[in-house]
Image (tube, rainbow, N blue to C red; front, side, top):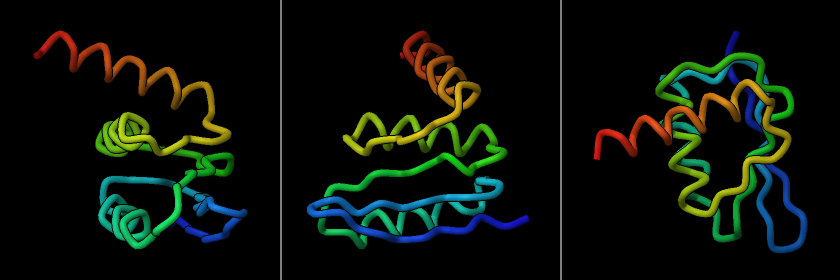
Length: 91
């Protein structure tokens, strides 16, 4: 299953609705979508069913850079928190 990215906007926001499996091979495509936006970006993760570690690290970086993760499932949110904690120990 591939990832589907739908672009929408609401005022000064660009909303990227993601659905499917978000894996490392999709990160570059997602980066291009984010960089192509002149408005503040929100990633709507409601329909994301599966992620891998590289994607979780990317999502953590996005959030650290001010990108909102909307409707993020608890398991992804937990994994992001663990990755952040792990990175802190390595620094």
